Every structure is written in structure tokens, then in C-alpha cells.
Image (cartoon, rainbow, N blue to C red; front, side, top):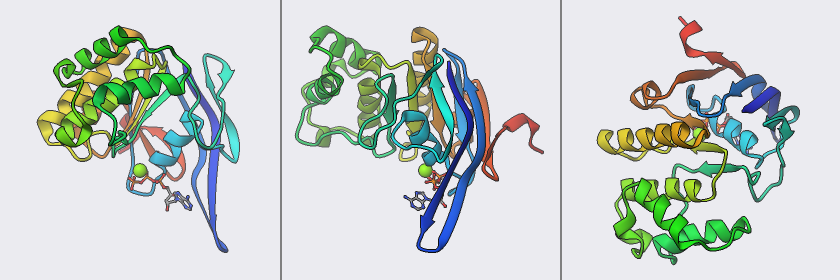
Length: 219
Ligand SMILES: Nc1ncnc2c1ncn2[C@@H]1O[C@H](COP(=O)(O)OP(=O)(O)OP(=O)(O)O)[C@@H](O)[C@H]1O
Ligand SMILES: [Mg+2]
């Protein structure tokens, strides 16, 4: 279970202070998928960074299974995988080596079977030796998902993972996230502007005025 309580984040740019997150409370159960929506600038990316441990909130706490998240600037909490919109694959490493690097960074021994399995689950077992520039946008996004899968994270956060994809690819990425949640009991939170993707998740939360509101309660 991912649990976030009374999270507040403000930014100061010179004398101007903005506060995208005022008091965010959110619980995501193991195996549950949540879409995080809200207009541009409402704080979705900020929220995901806080949930991942990449950014320390001004106030509030984030816990996974009742243990506080580890915050540090450069890396996420080891229990969390964050998938960025621009996938952030390492250009000079093959698909397989991108996954291998993710394991190394977390101090997990190189396991070829595990890498093959993760790539097979996103339908890319045959592209293991490809370089990222020889993949389509949808394929790169699926590699980024496989990289999140391979490390065995219990929380997967995805920031507009379908932003650059067509409808068919968006649906396949959303379906993969769902599959991950149900198969491995992972908590999944997806920031998205795409209602179609949001509908494929268990529920939708909207960031409004710095708070997380259940979509069905909005008029
Ligand atoms: N490092 C920063 N310094 C100052 N302000 C920031 C910083 N990062 C984000 N902000 C501000 O915080 C607010 C929320 O930004 P955030 O990127 O979280 O929004 P978002 O909901 O992800 O938007 P989008 O849908 O466009 O991706 C915005 O007003 C943004 O300008
Ligand atoms: Mg964003």
C-alpha cells in the first residue's frame, strides 16, 4: 500500500512563491491502478516526484507498507520505479543493457532470464539487442516499462507515459500497467491527460486547488 498524507509542496522563484500541492492525501492499494489527472501546472509531475522519493515535500509524509519513503535527489526509493514521458533510455546501450543497468543501479545481480521475461511481457523479446534509436516511440515506451518491471518495484509511477503515442499504443501501454498491477500486486499511479487511458485504470484522482479529489465527486 502506497500512502501519502497531508503533502504540501511550494516553489519559490525569486519573490514569487507558488504552491501546487497544498494538502494531498492519497492511498493506493497493492494491485490498484490510479489515474492522476488535472490541468497543466496542477502538480501531477511534482506529485509523482514526491511519491517516488526524488523530491522532499515541504510537509506531509509518504509511506510504502507503513515504512517511510527514502528521499534523495538523484534516485528514487528502491521500492519505486518511475517511468518518464520521454522514457529516458540510455542511447548508447542496447535494450537489454538498459535493463541490465537498471538492475545494477539497484544492486541486483545480472539475471538474463529476468530481463528476457520483462521484455517478453511487453512484447519485445525479439528486440533485446536493438539500440534505442532503432525503436519506434511506442516500443521505447514499452522498454521503459520493462525497465520498471525488471527491478521488481512494488510501486510504479508513470508520468504521461502515453503522451507521445497514438491511441492503439496508448491503450497497449495502459493495458500493460493494468496487467502489472493485477499480476504482481504493484501499486500503479499514472499521470495522464488522456481520458481514454484514465478509463482503463481502476479510478481517477484529479488535482485541484492543491488537493487530490476523487473524479466521481467532481461535477
Ligand atoms: N523546479 C520548479 N521551480 C519552480 N516552479 C516549479 C518547478 N517545478 C514545477 N514548478 C511549478 O509547479 C507547478 C506544478 O508543476 P508540475 O510540473 O508538477 O505540473 P503538471 O501537472 O505535471 O503539469 P503538466 O500537465 O504540464 O505536465 C507549475 O506551476 C510549475 O510551474
Ligand atoms: Mg507534468
